Structures are given as structure tokens and as C-alpha cells.
Image (cartoon, rainbow, N blue to C red; front, side, top):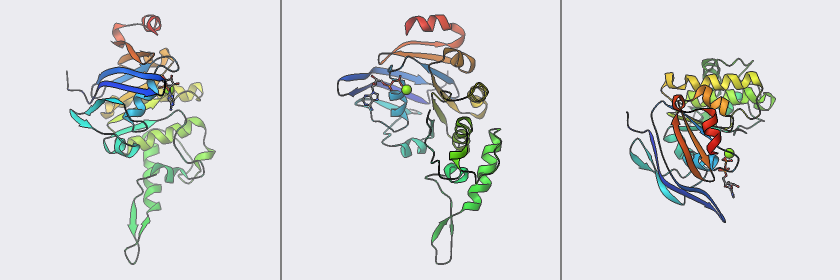
Length: 243
Ligand SMILES: Nc1ncnc2c1ncn2[C@@H]1O[C@H](COP(=O)(O)OP(=O)(O)O)[C@@H](O)[C@H]1O
Ligand SMILES: [Mg+2]
């Protein structure tokens, strides 16, 4: 088996009285699609928020490709190739699709006098391509994100992550507010990640979704990992039993 792309070692997180992560250790392998499952409050989001730089661990460490890393903020995570798609994703509704695609990473062109200005033309062109690449059909890169459906927004976030060639894509309950059709699309997308050499971490409390698109299932309950199996070696019933 290949070396892990992410190694989580002895992670602890406390929120005042709550011990949200209790000595979590987990190895995630290149190009696998890992389903992270558990009831509300199990600690799933806390765990992935540490990987995406939204929260800091209190104890323990994270290694990326064998190197110890400090993920202090979302920008560090991005630099390490970790992109996260949230349930309510982090886009600015009053800005266009093209602007949202490049938030924090705007390409510049240099005007007279050497003043850097955003290259909106490049942003528009690359957005159109990135969106087409994830098989999303949107009218124009100038449409405002606030005018899109939940599924379309999720699609733009996914296109953005793919465009910036993330190594690891984390999806935290990405299907919560989506229609059946949009949900199918996200599931198909998770399944296709490995062909593009992307490791996926798919968080859901829908067992069926995880069994449809993941290679492995990790179940959490009360801040601990209570099951970790290949999809082919377990069943929905067995996972339900331990939650
Ligand atoms: N920002 C926070 N402040 C205080 N407590 C939190 C915070 N985030 C999560 N928790 C608590 O930590 C535990 C794990 O929550 P969370 O990681 O969101 O679980 P999940 O994503 O599995 O539903 C819960 O008891 C939750 O109430
Ligand atoms: Mg959560």
C-alpha cells in the first residue's frame, strides 16, 4: 500500500467543557474516497476543520506526505493542496462567478506604471473552462453567485477546487440542501475524483450516499472513531450498529 497522503496522530480538541475529539488517529491514502460518517455532534466537522485550517488542534499532529505541517488558516490548507467544500459554501453572493472562482488568488495584469490590476478577462476565460470541466452548465461567468441554486453554487465551489488542482478535496455535508438530481451529481463527482488523482473526504450522515461513492468508511461517535473499514467489507447495517 502507498504511504498515506494525510496522517492524523493523536488529535484532541476541547471546546470549554466538550471533549470534541478524543485521541483521533487516522491515515488517509492517496486517491481514496473516504466517507466520514456519524451523528450530529460526533466531531466530523471539527476533525476536518483542523485539516482545512478553520480550527486548531489542542493536541496531536497532522502530517502531509510524511511531513509534519502547521495548518493555521485556510490559506495554509490551500497551499498544501487541501480544498474544502462546505455545506453552506464560502462564496460571496454579491460577486460574479468569475470573481468567486478566484477569491484570494486573483491573477494580476500590470497597467502603466507597474500597478497590478485584477485580470478580469483571464478570470472570466478560466472560469468558463473550469465550469465546463466539471460538466456544469451556467449561462455566464458574470452571473452573480447569489442568483444560483444551491447545487449550482456547490458546482462552482467544486470547479474552483478542481481548477486549482487540489490534492485533497474535503466535502462537508455537501448534499444537505440539494435536490435529488443535484445530489446525484455530487456523488458522481466524488466517485470520479480518483481518476483525477484527487483524494476525497466525503462527510455525510447519509449512509447510502457514502456507500455509493466511497472506498472506505470511517464512523465517528462522541469524538472517537468507532469503525474503519473498506466499503466492500462492511454494510450499512454494521455501520449503523456502532453509531
Ligand atoms: N465552535 C464550537 N464551539 C463550541 N463547541 C463546538 C464548536 N464546534 C463544535 N462544537 C461541539 O463539538 C462537538 C462536535 O461537533 P462537530 O464537530 O460539529 O460534529 P459533527 O460535524 O459530527 O456534527 C459537538 O458537541 C459540538 O457541539
Ligand atoms: Mg458537521
